[in-house]
Length: 149
View: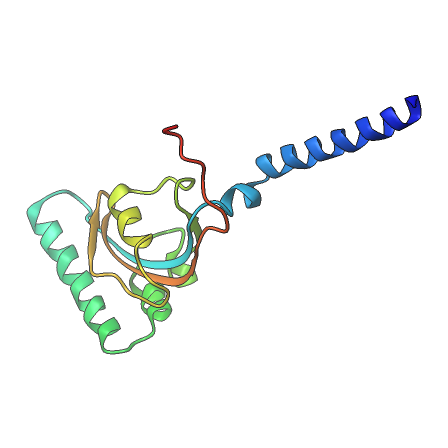
């Protein structure tokens, strides 16, 4: 009887361990949230002067027209994006997870509402003007528990 109790206790311990590991595993947590693989092109505002804002808006509009004409998004991002982290990678932002990644609110609102393959209109954030492309959309595999209970 004592031996059976130890085996049973061990199984419960393993189950608890698996549950704890899943809760701490970023991939386990991310499966609960909407994720998108995205690219973007950023034209910075420079100073906040109206002249700089107009120049930045004109530049992003030129790039946007080229995208609408069918030019390659990644190639245009490499050429024009002023994002030091993603510009040289064709604007690739990797996989963004809603509710986990800290993003500008205006950027997040757009990127998480795009369909796969869709390109956003021009988006203004605190960083400048963006054009965002959703490469892939990964819906949650399981729902996040509602914290209002």
